[in-house]
Length: 40
Image (cartoon, rainbow, N blue to C red; front, side, top):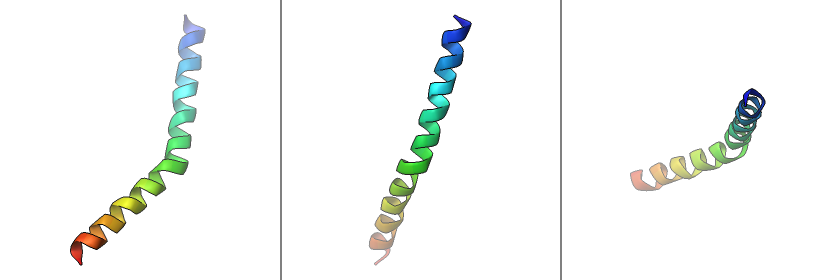
């Protein structure tokens, strides 16, 4: 059980790192461009 928990945490950590590396900049770019468009 403890091993499964550790592997789960490791997987979640890796997924979070991948998410913050790839998806976060994309989302931020979309958000900023939307703000920019709405201000014009």
